[in-house]
Structure formats: C-alpha cells, structure tokens
Image (cartoon, rainbow, N blue to C red):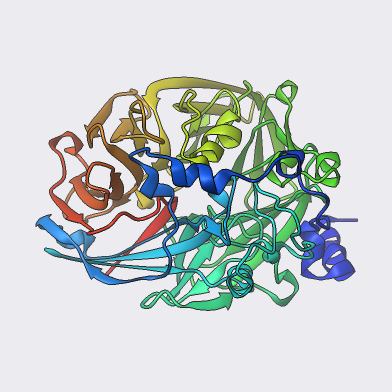
Length: 506
C-alpha cells in the first residue's frame, strides 16, 4: 500500500492511540521495584547551589515586575515565551528524569525599562487528573512508578513541557509524543489540545517545528511501536497542507530536524527503540538501545515528494538539537550543510538529565558544535567538529533553511554546575566564537536571536544565577556579545530550569 493508505489504515484501526500505540503499563522497571523510592528524600537532603533550578513551584506564578538594569532595545519590545519541566514531585514521589516534569509556561513582557514575568502550569489532562488524585497516575518518559494506570493513548502521558510555537494568534505548548496544547497568549490559560485534522487527533506532533522565512511550518512525529516517521506541512495561517506517515527501519529517538530550500533533513543517532524492553516494563527512555554499529544516518527527504528519500552515513554520534541546514549546487551534485551539537554517545540522556533529579551531577563530556556536509550526488557525507562546546543552538529566524554563518548557543561548562555557563556566537565557517561568560555561579538557558531591521540584531535569553538564587533575563547586541548585556531584568525568585521558547514582537 502507499504511505497515505498506510496512515489512513492505522488511524482507522484504532483512532488516535493506534499511531503511537503505547503498550499497556507493564511491571515497573527493576530499579523502581527492587528498592524503596528515595529520590525525593535525596533531593530534599541535597545542598547543591543549583537546587532551585529543579525544584517544584507549588502553584502558578502571578504577574511580577523584574528589577531592570539598562534599557531593552525597541526591537525586543514584545513577549518572550518559555517553557520547561516544573512539576517534578507530587505526593512524596519525585520523577527520575528532568524531562518528565509537568510543563510550566512563562511569559516575559518586555517594554524598554519594564519587564514583567508570569508563570503558569499547563493544565494537561494528565496534570489535572494527578492533582485531583494527589499522586502520579501515569508513567513519565523516564520514570515508571508502581501502581500507575495503563497508557491507552499518547496524550495520557502528555506533559507539554518542551517548546513553544506562536501561530496565528494562538500559543502552542509542545511535547514530544502527542498533541500540541493550546494556551491563551495573554493569560497562559490552557485551552485544550490542538487538532490539525479530525483523523490526526492525538497523533505525535514534535517539539521542534521549523518555521521558514515565508511562515511555512514543517514538523514531524515519531510512532515508535509502528516504526513510522510522520511529516507535517502547515501554511503560515495555520492550515494543514499535508500529513503523512513514512516507514523507517531501526527507528531512533529523534528530537529535532532541519529544512533547506528543497529538503527535510533528519540526523538519526543509533539510539533505537526496542519493543522487547518496553514489554519487559521499561520506561519509554529505557526502551531505547544504543547500537553504534548503525552509525549516524542522515535521512534526506524531498519537500515536494516525500517518497523521494536518500540515506547517507556519518560517524556514530548522538544529538538533541540542530542549528540550521542549507544547500548549494556543486559540480558533483547538491550538497547540504548542517550544523549540530554532537556527542559521542547518549550517556547524557541516561545519566546527566536523570541524576540532577536527586541533586547530583553525573558529569561527562559536553557536545561540540559540528558541521556536516551531505553530498546527494555522490552519496557521501563528511563532518568537521568545531572547538566550541555547545547546546541550545539558535539562528537568525530569517535564515532558516538558507545559508547562514553564525549560531547562537550556550557554551563553557564550569565545575559543580549542571549545563553550561556562557553564551556564544560561533561562525560555522571559520569556527571563531564570541563568548560572554555569566560567571562561576550561572546556569545558562536557551538564548534567541531577535532581528532588528535597523541593525545587526539582538540576543535575548535567560540564566539562573545560583549565587542570588534568581532568574535573570539578558539582552546583548548580536555583533558585540563579548561586551556583555545592554540590559538585564532580574526576577525576585528562581524559575525551574527550562528548555525552549519563542519571541513575539509587539
């Protein structure tokens, strides 16, 4: 059957849940069953200076004025939306992975020398039911508690905690394995799930859509048990143009992808779903196996004809995020250039982002910014690792899918702190970086590039100041990062460390 017929039959066979088809909850993972669950008590006893970054706010955070130093430029007048895991514990139980926590959306309203913050939990069906019960009812991405309910549909696990998309006056909180969740852009009130088309209700819609300069949105979803990669094309007005499901052998964990002028590009690390582990009771995370013999595969799909695909081979590695990709015509054929923070393996996913939930640092190497070249004419691929350690890569949104030179990213790890402590702008052609360090007690979150039609643009983002136990919003001139912030807004409290966001100008 063709792929569209495959999608139709899967949906017809069992409704929304059939496409992702989580298995019923099995006996919990051995680590959970064989010993008392002491994660909450270990975290409570921890004295690390970054502990507030992984603590659970007891409720929503009302609109609060920040203390502003300097003046935010006119181009960054607007709203910075951010989101991340925040509800880490409930009823004495603490999640065993950072990515499991209930999502909290944040709204920073910026106007010159005035900044106000508001935070609100996303009222997913999962959170609402568990708050009523006073305990966890459903497993998380990396945690299986005893006595949790059978997972009958992807959105039963949906915590809406990874990223944000502003589309047509609507704000979407994005997760990895289920629906987008609609929020009110002014109040952050939850309005329910987003359904792109009736037969796509509950189908995975990933957390890293790509928005081209003309407003076209591309996204994907992963159906692990069915071995399917779903693709979406959405018009700038939010109307779905196409959606389809493509079979993919050795389906890995995919968190991000890229677009070029003519192609969709997926880098496939060898962290592959193993249904036998799932049947044995493993969490979704622990149902994935590291298979380095597969290497890193690069899947290139024609944007106009999704049946036209090409697979290229790269050295084994792991990634969360991609900066950007673009293509050029050469005598040997089309060459796609793509940059991403690359790690040697997936140990950070299984250790670093887990152990912080106990208040412990696992350690290990940080990813490095890497530039790969995929030659579609010869079928060969090569890559160069740049010096800069990097995570949370972002570019000028006007350059998505087009040639670019600079990537904004977090960098510079310091001992004793999770994540990274500086912000950088790295030239992906020369490898040269501008770097600003926030200091020895700073944990850097994602920073965005904000265009300015009258100049080189601005870099806007948050960091957790462990010394003050406060969250700080900073703005830099994009061409003078090393000069430090032109303006900063310090909140009177620390926010839970988050993941991604989006900026909406006035």
